[in-house]
Length: 289
Image (cartoon, rainbow, N blue to C red; front, side):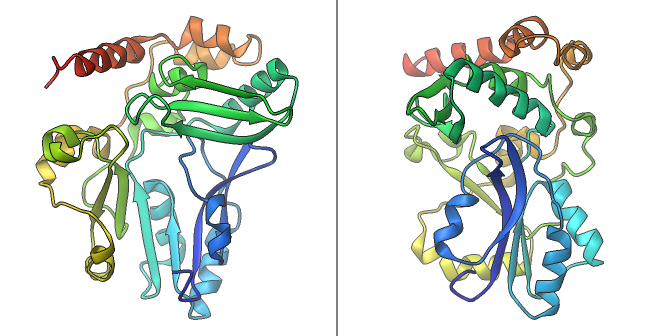
């Protein structure tokens, strides 16, 4: 896209890693702004309007986002456009930005410095048991596994998602996007020879445009076709909404009155963590198939 003079829209950090917003890039050296997972709702701002202007000028545009953001864009534009490519993802759901901002404030207070870089998916403990990392201006770093970090526990236990995420209207296999991108959970069943715990990606093609694009780049990829029933079986969030944590209401009622770690201990629970730890331990012992 970029080598063809096109524009790419996606989510990036701003405001010292406390905020996530959609932005446009036009150069290869800007790609790092959009790389990496952000488990936060992004602000669209004027990106729909900018996309429409780029398309009217005849530019190629790749727009990436959550399924609801892609359908929002297509609704704004009045339908698909010849020079528009869209890519969504298998979405767990998104916490509102102020939850993430509050957590960054909590970590910065403990570090005594401002955040300069964040990674939601550090793989120092592997792809399955990834870690959340925050690097600070005093050269210190906070890094903790997903089952121990308070923000990730609340997120994965569905305690802090937006209300609409518990009844998402855009979770279905027949997406409005051209592509869906995701982690390939279940790879140990679908393609076990590639299961190295370093991470594997899933790419779903929904349109003729997507099939044509993939045919032009597949020679530079390592890939294997998998069956859609298996994709749904091991990646249920493609078609299913998350169920709200039973203490979600209390979580939000106390979000401004408790320290973040105490808030999560009291109102986010640990059922996900226990399941994930047990599964990881069994897998390492060779007992889980």
